[in-house]
Image (cartoon, rainbow, N blue to C red):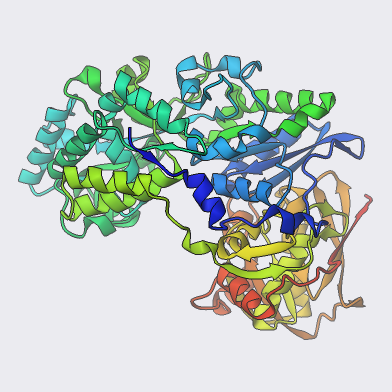
Length: 636
């Protein structure tokens, strides 16, 4: 095994995260994720890796556990995000989730998370799947959610039309590609541009080697890296991986320029019957009969025989629990109850929201996917490989994979380059300190809004000197802390990157916009899925009545305390994700047509919410003071 300087120690020395001492000196901005109860109800803060978790799961949890007060926050899909919270001396939320996962990346969080190995929910898993998450001392702090299935989608109707047998092993897979190419149809294509495609095809081409005793031993060593030493590629398994990947790229006939292929350029020819097979997921393949008029089936990553074939899977996310939860027995019982519900058949079905997934839990069957028909034997043989998905593996797989596609690297050069990058610490270009924040503002939602959300919206309004700014969809993911901010930390304040627009609105149109964003519609659709996702305004205040838990009615709109003039004209800056409000799987509240027209006409070209935030803070060098933009009263 080749050893390297600890990557984690190197990043800390380079100042990727703010110094704890500088942050604790300021105070006042910590999110109170560990609060035990509120209004007589136990409060549970649940960080989501992506907005997709809010399609069905979060509403279902609120309905299932009305005795708990949930605070759902849209976070980021990286362990660095949570490490940054800890390094600024903040407390981890009660439940956290992350999709891109490895024990390697998660190790710095271990002492702050509960060992779940003896809990009832851990006992529901097949032990083979938990082995990848088991620390050397036996602790299990992360539990995998249901599995996405990644592989090759084949147009089975096209195979039948040309009388080409569906392959059952690697040789037949190559023969099918050649047969389609002979009749002018592209045999196989993948969206090689993306890091996950490079990572998954590289590992997928050699799963039997990676699942061998030598392969699993190497992975265990890699995942058990310590602060004073780490593991490079071995010289037994990984040379074979690169040899097989080189052969795979040759057999699927990659061409110059394929390293730049994105999803749409490969999907469109597949939908048009011009490509026979593409890399995709079972969830995408399942919708093809209805949407595109042909049957698609997932094929595995093939071995030399059918018995060597595997499906590459990855959890929709992993979940962990802050060890502060254990300090309160009632809260611990509540969190474990919620966790048990999430991992039940119904909970995982809500998380999947109709998508084709497999469960890592015993006696939980949550898919009826037609696209998995031809891999039932692979599933029954338990040949489900869980991808190795550390942050550095994504990055290096993309770099090396692209150079193998272009022909710059052969198998040996690919192995050497991958290993060199793996054993060489890499400084983060996003680590440069941009400014030092002097005042902290909390993310916590009160009856007068969130101070951090208000500060963020005030900063966005300042970027274009608008008289009023309105933000909607999940806007903020962290408190604003006191201390140094790098570019990455600046971007982590905002939960996503949103379309922005600015133009003239009358007071009446502003009122219409706020009614659209607040009031429950006649069909029951609620634009405020969760309390902390209420619209955030700057330069304008509003008052609402909460007449039922989670349901609000707009009452008043004021400008600096004076009632809004419906006839006056205001320059309004708007930021938000329209799909969050409009799409039926989220809020199901379509934007009124006159407002949609203005949103389109007033779109700011070559700008988005992140660029606006960076532009604003490049001038101010400070997040601005928040405003009391909201008043919530209880009533009928």
